[in-house]
Length: 170
Image 1: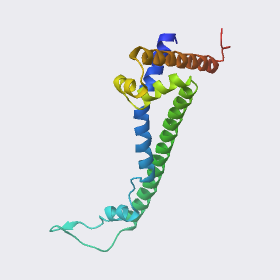
Image 2: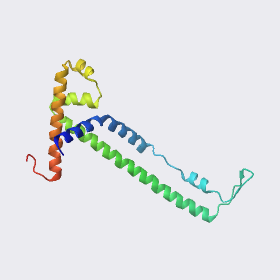
Image 3: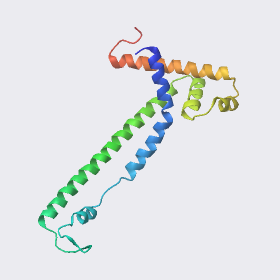
């Protein structure tokens, strides 16, 4: 991957920061409040052993076959609920890891560069807001951002070489 491609990846990752935060919030909510079907809802939905006559379903007898089907359905429902819970947990872990890595990489920059990167990409502040808040000229802000991006490109390139088993610096 060339430097231009790595730079594009760095910028894409930085721009995705806020959407990653939103994903984490949504996934945590789903993890804490999973959609579940109760056993009684499964049994009630399967209690169709008698036909509906004049719009009224007669209560009472549920055949053994219906109970076996309901039990199998309940087991399947439990497996699906468990799989969904596991998928949510895995996705949450992956997104949290991606966000954590990005925060760590930015923390490795010089403080002035990191501050501009955090405020611009992570907090979504405009250049005007940054100029007023940091009392800096636009060229200074852009220089710090660009220097920070260059440093992040170096980190990504280095880690890419390490991951491929290459000797960095060659």
